[in-house]
Amino acid sequence: MGPSTNDILGLPRPLDGLGNGVLAFDIGAYEFNLLATVGTNWLLNYGLNPNDPLVFASHPNGIPFTVLQAWVADANPTNAASFLQAAAVSNLPPVMVYFQSSSNRIYSLVWSADPQTNWAPVAGQAYVRGTGGLMSLADASAPGQQRFYRVSVAVP
Image 1 (tube, rainbow, N blue to C red):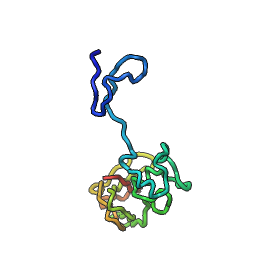
Image 2: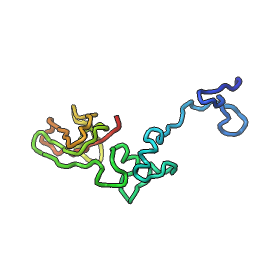
Image 3: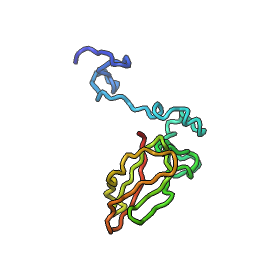
């Protein structure tokens, strides 16, 4: 193998990643730093320790959602009442699902005939920007068969 060069971080490449004296190319990817995406201030605002390596997998106050799920939902990780939940559902055509939204997130209405498998987005109701208040997503094409619905949230 040829001589070692440096990557954009100044680390030698190829690298002796196994510590056995043999230089070898790695896959070339950099580790994803979730803390850099979320930010320490967000964690500190809720009294969470940004230096805890398991902070994003934790369940503060016994809440059934992780800190990472709270961040994705733009919710308070220490208050279960702040998480995304249906406020109301109208089963008259069109089926409407109402929920409190965040203007910093996008929402999708998905459906399935079997809640264990095969969830699919409702046409025209995927990746809809939140309003910051009560909003609804609708399924105008719901046939006469039974359907189950979920609202998913994502970071834009």
